[in-house]
Each structure stands twice: as structure tokens, then as C-alpha cells.
Image 1: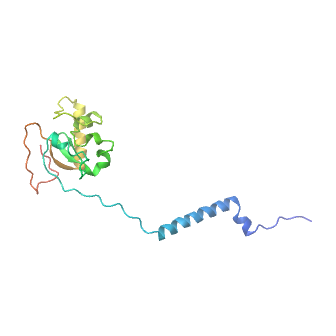
Image 2: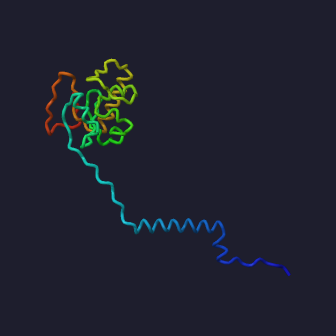
Image 3: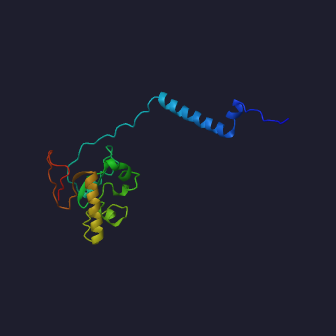
Length: 175
């Protein structure tokens, strides 16, 4: 008389380690699907407040006000004498951002030399930069031109601001 093993029951099949693990994974996935289907939609992040476009030339002193700490949160920086509104990149250039030192300053020297520090001079003519640094600053200016709105020019001491009309092209470089 030979002994045969009894047929495994459904319970035995379900409680085997592999099948039990698979059942847990399937139950978890069904839970996630149903939860997502019946859960009310989460509140979307409030839309970012778009500030009115700013078109004016600024002195270094006036530019310092736009470091992101004012109530409107506007962040401006200058590269090669061109002022850009980088408020859209506030997480980079605003307070607490990795490049916050550039906010409200002439960032030409810092960007050209690779040091994260804005110019603290009244006006930095950057005439002492090497040709490679001048080229790097020009590349940064081109990147900013493609990504951010141009506000105006950074005025040299004694220079007077230009009056911009409402219909003047935003992208037109003024030098």
C-alpha cells in the first residue's frame, strides 16, 4: 500500500509564502486604485501671481531693492548691463535660493568667474575680466535673454534712464 500525499486545499494554496505575498501586493494595489478614484481631488497649488511687466532703466542703488524681500517678491539681476526679471526663477535667485547673492545686483562678475557673489561696487565696469570670462558672461546674458524678460539697462553713474513706450518690444536689447 503506497501512501500518497493529500491534495492541497485552497487555504493551503493561499497561505503559501509566495502566494500570500502576491495577494498582499494585489490587495494593496486595489486599495490604492480605489482610494485614488474616490478621494476628492487635492487642491492644486494656487496660481503664481504674475507681476506686471517692468520696463525701466535702474541704477545699482535702485536695483538693490529688487532682491525678492519686498512685499511683491520681484527679483531682478543684471548681466552685462542688461537687467532681467528673474522672478519666475525665484527658487534659484530669491531669498534662500542657491544664487540669492545675485538678486538685486550686477551678477556679471560672479557669473563670468563662477563665484556666487554679486558685485557690491557702486558700478562694476568689469573691464578687468579675461577674454574667457567676458565670453562666459556673454553666454549667461544670452541664456537670460532667452528665458527671462528684459527690464532695461543698468545705468552707469551720471547716465540718464531711457523712457520706454508700452508698445516697445520686450525682447529688444537696449544698449
